[in-house]
Image 1 (cartoon, rainbow, N blue to C red):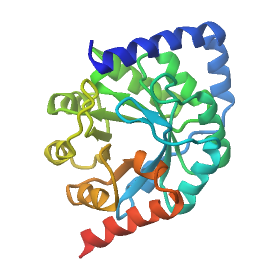
Image 2 (spheres, rainbow, N blue to C red; image 1 turned 45 degrees about the vertical axis):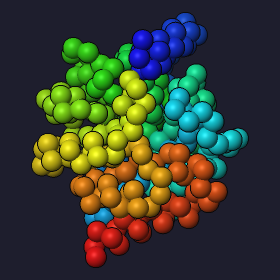
Image 3 (cartoon, rainbow, N blue to C red; image 1 turned 120 degrees about the horizontal axis):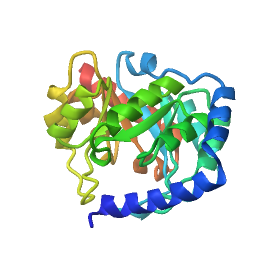
Image 4 (tube, helix red, strand yellow; image 1 turned 60 degrees about the vertical axis):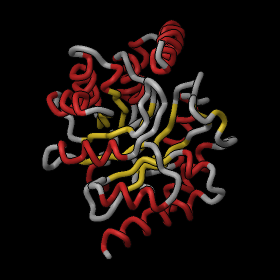
Length: 265
């Protein structure tokens, strides 16, 4: 069993528990009552690099990263520093996240909010919208057959923008064929947890014109964001480096300024 298989097994178990506690009809009603989702694409398309700053307590590869007693305050610092969006991990077992974190962040910030989880079922898409998310992460590696296209369609139906993540050329081709326009490349191989940032450099040229290119994982500091930008990233998702920085507001600003200054020079 790969690392990803083990994660997905736990995700499905937790999903069934939540499904038994909250009927789908209730989620649909809450989603219908929620304010309209925010569109992240205008900010992502502005000149220069955009940052999606992540609320992330721990990871399977690094263990505990940061004590985050108040995710809303952290998200507010990100937004004040210039983050175009905030990502909230909601997977519980390996990442220490929750839907309560998503609720707290959504109530605090005015920028778009991404639900980052291992979404494998339509129920989770309804959950994301019911809890105020504006974007939802869809990982090609975990979505077989027509499920990717089906979940993308549901995201758009309920107002969510799908961020469709790939790690290989074959996965990227599936994402493009399914109609994805917000295309993420994860430098981390989720089956092994190995990180290779050059994966983005290899896949970015394969993305169609007009797509928004998002680099994910492997960022230790401003120079990594700058390199992703030189390779063609419009957006960089940063988690660990920000939660460990000690000054998330200043760090977001520094990442943006360094990347844009180096590309302009």
